[in-house]
Amino acid sequence: MPTEQMGAVDLHGGDVGVTPRWMVGVSLVIGFGLIFFLGMVGGVMKAAQGNLVHLSPSTFYALLTLHGDGMISTVVLLTAVAHWYFLRRLLNLRVEVLVFAVLAIVWGLVAAAVAILIGGFGPGWTFLYPLPFIGNTWPVWSTGLFFFGVLFVGIGFAIFCLDILAGIIREYGVLNGLALDTIFPRLRRADGKVAPPTVIAATMVSIDGILTAAAGTVLVVDLLAHWAMPHFPVDPLWIKNLTYFFGHTIANLTIYLSAGVIYAALPHYTGRPWHTNRVYAISWTTSLLFVPWAWPHHLYMDFVQAPWLQIFGEASTYIATIPAAVVTIFGALLLVYRSEMRWRIGSTFFMAGLLGWLVGGVAAMIDATIPFNEVLHNTLWVPAHFHTYLLGGVFLFVIGFASYFAGDDAPPTRLTKTFEWVFFIGMIGFLAMFYAGGIEGVPRREAVQPVPGPLLAVIGTAFAAVLLIGMTGLLIEIFRRGQRNGATHEREVT
Ligand code: HEM
Ligand SMILES: [Cu+2]
Image (cartoon, rainbow, N blue to C red; front, side, top):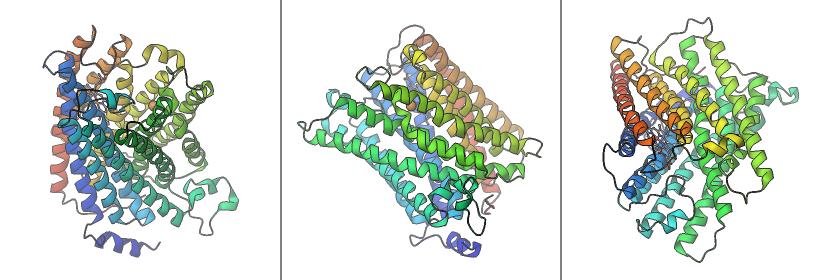
């Protein structure tokens, strides 16, 4: 695709009169607004567990559901939009499709929020059958509305994935989208062009994302049928498998979306391009094949589950996680090593996020190992590990992207450094309390926890407050610095 032509697409936006930059900017504002609100909800839940505020159990479980469903949908939105920002120039994507995807996800979030905040729907964000139907504290309409909300989030994500996959097929084809031409000379193109790492990540995410959205659709349609016609039979084991195929994988894909962002954005700070090679092709193809098989690690306690799935799920968890994480973290270190790395808010958060991904990933694999799972299952170890890589990984990547997007290239000031420290100290302390609870065997998802849960929750609440103060200050600073820069210039994608 000649660059002039792509420039024309950029400048004129689409028929809906929306420019890509505007759309990405608006999505970031919506997403960060939601994270702030849902983070406050998280802080209130912790405070309630620490007996600092009083919530009725049904309110607690409704807020838990809101926080979980909202946070996951929001990071899907944010990471997808950030990845799209780079992909649109590489794949000549149209902004109209992104508008539809974002609208579907936001609509899904609103529907779920109404079901929860007005209806009191509260079976947890994984809405495991039969809980949504037997919880007697919420009305029947809220169950249906919540499922519609989930359906729309899935549809929005599917639109995003299908559009990207179509772009990849147009520009590279699926095999070369995975850079398999670096391994098989027969696939090589005449012009010698190889897919950049951002596109490799997009190929993996879009294919696995379509599978995930398909599973989510089957799941929600099954549940909606049961909701409308209570005689419609559903098999609990089948539903549980589908639920985790959908829930585990969609949450997991936000990390792979983030990797696509880092491949494109980090070179801006190191001054070196991030090249594709065979190792990327092999690692990402492996992740593509195994990510959809990791979900059974949520069902180790289900004795009726087929044993081969348990073993295969454990093995797939390792095989899916390790290669892409290792190549990304090593790749980033090589990119930074002896480069004249410019430490800005963007680059700092990208590197810190990689650390969160590593720590959270190791903690996740510990939990996905059957003998450990026997003691850690459904303890606070679970929110410990996923907050490490979602809050301490994916969310940091998104902050890094926001800084990049805002054109905030000024060196850190004393104020931004202070906010960074406040944020990191709050975050680490907050996560540490989750891990401590896990090691002590405090169960997750309980409005009222056994000792030492409440004490840890008091300390966790204090750290959460620190985290939220640092986060808010930093985001306001990024926004202000971005505005000062005009933030109108577009950058080269490496
Ligand atoms: C900003 C600060 C945050 C705070 C204070 C916070 C707090 C909490 C608390 C207290 C719980 C309940 C844990 C339990 O007892 O089971 C929880 C659960 C959860 N959080 Fe967060 N969290 C934060 C950020 C995030 C982020 C960024 C994400 C995802 C991107 C996230 C996703 C979740 C999910 C999926 C659950 C599980 C919900 C369920 O069990 O149904 N949280 N969080
Ligand atoms: Cu999982």
